[in-house]
Image (cartoon, rainbow, N blue to C red; front, top):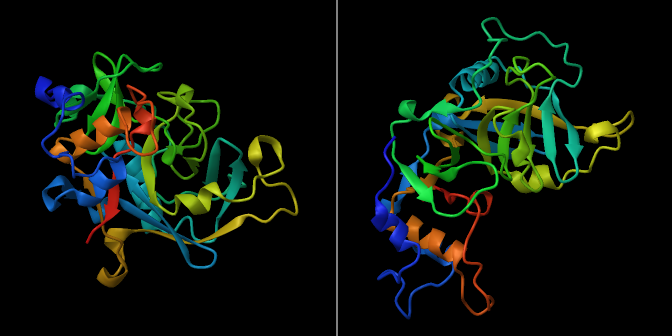
Length: 296
């Protein structure tokens, strides 16, 4: 796996010509003023569109490069309309919002793999794009960085998606081969990184995270809704590529090899503006989310 060379790391610490005295000095300003060349389109067949009660929408970007078997299941489930009529049935404070079939008895479509065991991390050799490193210590991995728009934790031979806020994982029972992708959750609290490499992460919420994070918490064990508590109904879940052109969401992710992303990271770690008196001097992986925007 290629690591981007030292000049990228230097850009995190040295003055940038892109940030002259009259240039923006906040991460959000860098994102707002990033040129078109700093953005990459997100493929429609990696966007999962979940419509819930009130015709509100949650859009999830899937990560087939990191969890190919689970993402294949998720695509098949969406095309079968399997989630239609199900619900968000668990919301645990500072942890997750989870959806699927609360009874765990609904039959899966034919062809869904039910014995996936190796979708927690990917060999570095299988990931063909360079690593943009994040040069700060991490409590859960020897190294961290970004690959093809995704935050990653890395060891000597593999990379995996971390349990950051808004990341989407595959709910499972005790056995590591019980998660099919039919039951999914989004992280709504402080990043539970202890779950990394114990549960498959298959994507991230890029629209509608505010809806999931603001749902009433369940009063049952682990945040499950108890009898009499209203679960949020799911009207439909579809891949964006299967929707009519006029209904497809279109999103872009910032190129993690771009000058704009280097400036963004530097300011996330070393912010000094009208509000910040003391720069942090570092940033962890989950506090440097890769910017995503609707396509102009």
